Length: 384
Ligand SMILES: [Zn+2]
Ligand SMILES: [Zn+2]
Image (cartoon, rainbow, N blue to C red; front, top):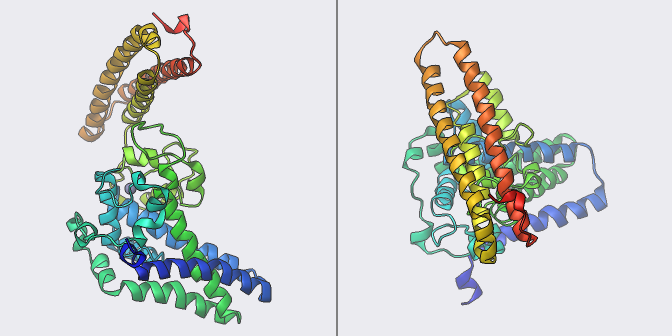
């Protein structure tokens, strides 16, 4: 197939020129004119806000509806997201919902099964059949005022706020080209490739703590420059959760900002997976890993460890059943009456900790069995 048939020339030119001007243009500018403090600061400022428009706005609010907010915040996030030049919310959310619903199939627009390059940027550069690239599954978003406005004026918002405003700010300290290069071209290149790395790198390297069978991976490293979006294995498992980094020490600034806004009642209905669900997914992921290792190993190991594994599995099922029942009760109590019995709740908290500990122990035994099979060892302590 010829190059022009395979690739969308306009996209190839745009996505080549942006990083070329962003990196080489800025490097030349620095070489001849040096750096002033305003420019890295402008880069960080525009990067932070346009990146947040994508993670908090396009992704977690519009594509996944993992929380709700007032129209004013929807407008702000729409404007910030437009600055990232990643197309309109409708197109972005349509592609992204497909990515989750049809993950790793032919209908996944950025399926990793078609290779790292395709998932990173190739899918944007290639000519896609009209039927495949049409906007679908986003009717719920179409009538929002911010989105209707963006559909009409997307390029104006992106060009005026993403390029002309930095240029004008640059005029105030007599380096308009410097400001345009740093906060315009270089910043957009960084925002673009940070987002693209989630679709490529986070389906390639990292841990599969919550779903062993998914290609999505958790990468704290990618989270550092994507405002928390690197915990992609968790995100694919619980795509409706407003958090991507679920532990308290996970670097997820988008989550922190949503939490802060919720204190001021500016966002509401924050969706969150329960601890029982998270622990269950972690355990299932290790069990799936164990099944995978067993399926590839000598049947001697299967026979040696099988009793222990099925015993642990039964125990885990019983614990999770009890835990799930307790959480349903817990939620009923919280919703039900204004007069909440603190003793019952603290007793539930204690039981929750106990369930968590027991599941952690079972998970750790599964991991030990995996390690033993990897080392080709038969460990009597791990057999019944
Ligand atoms: Zn993904
Ligand atoms: Zn998502």
